[in-house]
Length: 254
Ligand code: NDP
Ligand code: 8X3
Image 1 (cartoon, rainbow, N blue to C red):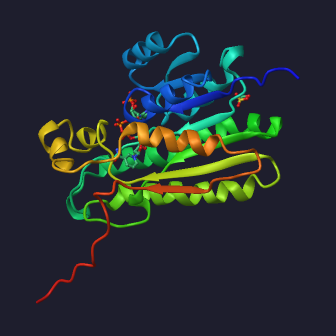
Image 2 (cartoon, rainbow, N blue to C red; image 1 turned 90 degrees about the vertical axis):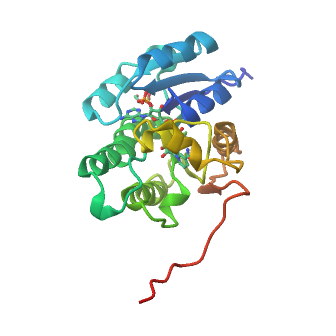
Image 3 (tube, helix red, strand yellow; image 1 turned 180 degrees about the vertical axis):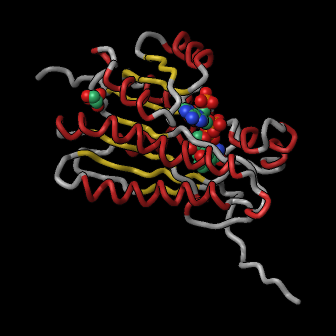
């Protein structure tokens, strides 16, 4: 028969960290990859590096109308999304709830929850119509395990976890698959720099003296989940560096 058509993959938050590594991983397979983020210069560099199979797309996932328009206007070679990787996201701040900046909370909710919904809603009808597709969401261990200062960030990732499972119910019988990838500490990305408002020293201290996961580790998990036979749905992948584990409850003594 005819050679299988290479997959079309849309990766959000492709200008840095996991997203850029995921773009590279799928591009190495010969996939067509739509690489979206707000920073156009970063995307242009990535596209020049990887060639015409990568389509840079300047897009803020918080802009519902822009997301809808962008998906509708995809060039023919990139229309028909097989895999959507909802990776765009961020943590802002690590202070206690009673001291947090409400604007930081709003930005996390708008990006990690609502932005993910906008992209998913725009890509799903095509997948359902074609009877195949895969939505991979970036959750976090912060969505399952509380930690001091994790407040709203962890709550957005709990949302991502539960929305992923609920999506599976809605997509029952459509052939469309859903996976939530939930990493622990991962270095070499801008995650902590963003969390600490550009304070590199504070960001680097998070990973001092330990070996965190790398963006390539995450890209491999995402790629693995999407490479399973069509009858297999990987619901959740939770992974941590060996150097990270759990600790006991804290007790306040009077
Ligand atoms: P980075 O900060 O390196 O990358 C985040 C990406 O998201 C950037 O490409 C950024 O691009 C994009 N982004 C942020 N806001 C928006 C927006 N409004 N619209 C479009 N794109 C946006 O972080 P990581 O690669 O580490 O994180 C990627 C995902 O993985 C996030 O969802 C994060 O919560 C999650 N995660 C990270 C972990 C870690 O330890 N690093 C662990 C567990 C989960 P731009 O600024 O150009 O828009
Ligand atoms: C528009 C959505 O997935 O087909 O049709 O590109 S998709």
